[in-house]
Image 1: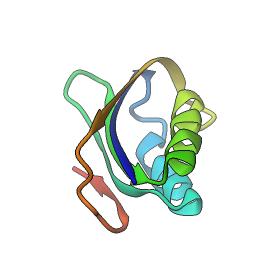
Image 2 (image 1 turned 90 degrees about the vertical axis):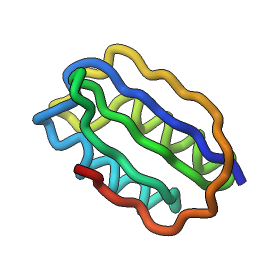
Image 3 (image 1 turned 45 degrees about the horizontal axis):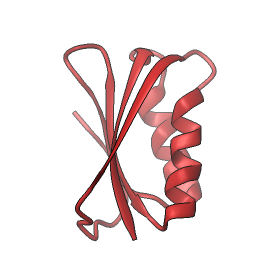
Length: 89
């Protein structure tokens, strides 16, 4: 099991990023959450087996069609054994 915090920068707010990320995470089998940040970035925490985490990170590098991801920062963190994937406001 692995958990990562993921910061996605670029044109990632107002383009359906959080909703698409939730759909992608649930399809892959990743738990955690996603939220918009005041600086215009999107922040996510994702937890799953390493293969699934890597698949979700690959998705985050592209995002939904209207997004323009410029930078992604991934940092490993302590596993929390969360369930489900949520959009936080």
